[in-house]
Length: 166
Image 1 (tube, rainbow, N blue to C red):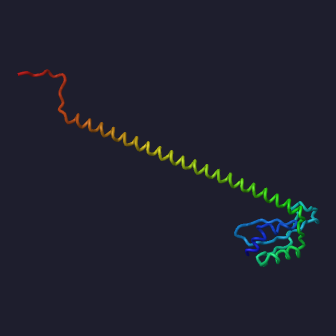
Image 2: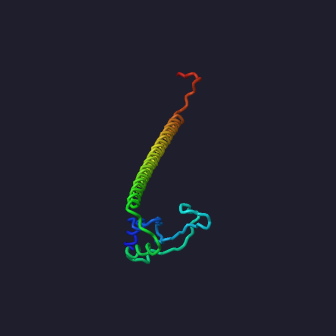
Image 3: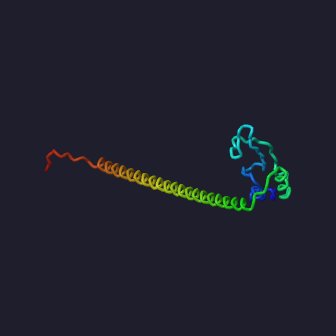
């Protein structure tokens, strides 16, 4: 399996003309051979008209030599040096674009995490402010209650009764 992975990931399979590798995580490595459907008016570049001809499970092949032999047996031709150089440049460009895309995604994720952290912090501060206001209100209510109790305990002095002297 390590040789198959290397054959596919390191670009050996794509060193053949008209070979494209797509990785599907968790799936077996299957080579699907397509043929242009010329009888339906299709052309090479028009994949809509292509027809599936054969599927081959690549894990049945143990060595890179066997895999190269398979590709040659199925009629695939090696790319020229110029084609390989252009392909490598394209792959490097795509890899750089993918790195940039992932970096942007990481930056966006970090920004979102920071925004969520700030929001939680603000909500926590708001909760603490509300609690503090509640405690102040309760203290004020308690103070008013105590003042009212003191007033109720004092004897009432009538204001309009004349003072009696002996």
